[in-house]
Structure formats: C-alpha cells, structure tokens
Length: 264
View 1 (cartoon, rainbow, N blue to C red):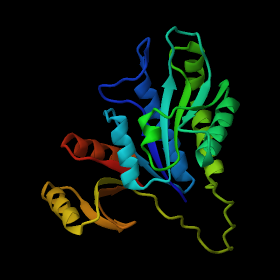
View 2 (view 1 turned 180 degrees about the horizontal axis):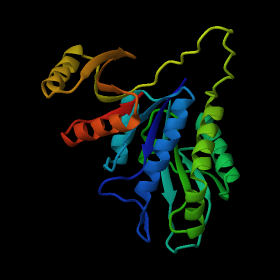
View 3 (view 1 turned 90 degrees about the horizontal axis):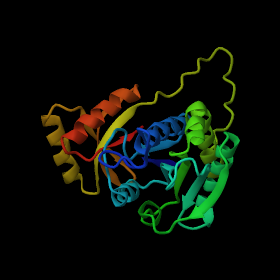
View 4 (view 1 turned 135 degrees about the vertical axis):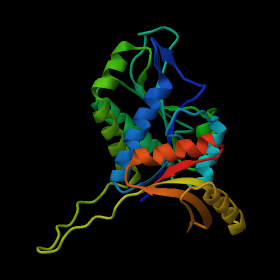
C-alpha cells in the first residue's frame, strides 16, 4: 500500500479565504482528517502535515513530504473569487497534466462531481510550491468556492459523501483499492490487526542523532522510542488506539518546539 501525505492548506496565522466568518483553514483541516481516516481504513499509511491550527510554509510542507518519502501528496483547499457567489464548482490542480497525478486528479474530480459539484477540470499550476517542490505525484484539491453560498451548503450537507468520494477516487486511481476479504474458515476467530496512532518527532540516517532526541524526550517524561524503517531511525512517541489522544500529544510536543507528524 502507498504512503499518502495529507496536507490541510493554510492554518495558524494564515486563515486562507474568509467569507462571513467562515475560514478556509478550518474546512481544509476537517476534510483532510476525514479523508485521511478513510484512506487508513483502506489499509494505506497516512501522514498529516498538520492536525491542528498551526502554520507551515508551502516549502516546509513539500520538504516534509520529501523527507518522509511519501508516494503521493494531497493538499486540501477551497477556492475563492473576487466577488461572492460568482463562481461555483470543484477542481484539482497539478504541476503538469502527465502521469499518475493526472489519473488521481481526474478520478477525484469525477467523485466530487458525483457528490454535486460542477466539475471545473484538472488545471496546471507549476508555480505552486507544494506541486513544484514535491518529489512525488502531488495534487491540490479545491472543494468548491468558499465565498459561494451554494458551494458551502453542498460542502456541509454532503460532507461525508465528499470525503468518501475523494478517498475512493484516490485508492482506485492509485491501485490501492482494498480487495474483498476472504471469508474466515468456520470455527476460526477473525482478529484484525489493531491500528495505533503515533507521533513522529524526528527521522535520521545517523542513529546517534535519533538517540539524542530519544533521551531528551524521555527525560521530559514522554513515552518515546526508536523505530528503524526505510533506512531511517525514526523517533516516535505514544501508541494510541484513539486518534484524538495522538492529536493531543502532537499538539503538546509541537507547542514545545518539536517538529511533529502524525503516523499510523
């Protein structure tokens, strides 16, 4: 299964588009988390650039994705225009219209159209840092116009269908669709592997650097450990069944100045 970097656009001091008190950064985070959970349910590995209201530059987000070795980068946004209620619809932005990213973008747009949005197509935006600087297929998804009342009503009313459709389009186009589960033999108990959420605080080629960070975290009382994976020594903390608990720990570590990511 692929590793997906899920990015909720804007955040913190950058609200994105604002319309009648509604902030783009909030809609982006809500949808990003919902789609991420559905991808995880499908068996994929998901890493979030943010899980709370914090700001990172687009370059930092691209750099994070590259360091983590993601297979796909998916950035969630909402569109806006100079005049309210002038435009409507959803679109997906890519660096260029080639390869796997185009397949994913078209699949996502079809799903957004099925949920009720006008399909504005796949657009090239080579100047965007999150599309230009990432070393994997990268997409920026615009789920309707924030300053169009009809698009906001659709976003709220069909939120679950939007999240499910986006996840379905991603898994289908990437080839990660979960195959039908084989029936369990009679008399044998089906015990699925438990999913746990962890907070990643650092990843190093040099084990000494990882051990220094590990020691620092443990001295501060955090349940930290080192996981060797993909050629890196990854320093992580916690192992939670509930996503909310991991989000709280990530927020606490981030407020203390650590660079954190949520993984499962």
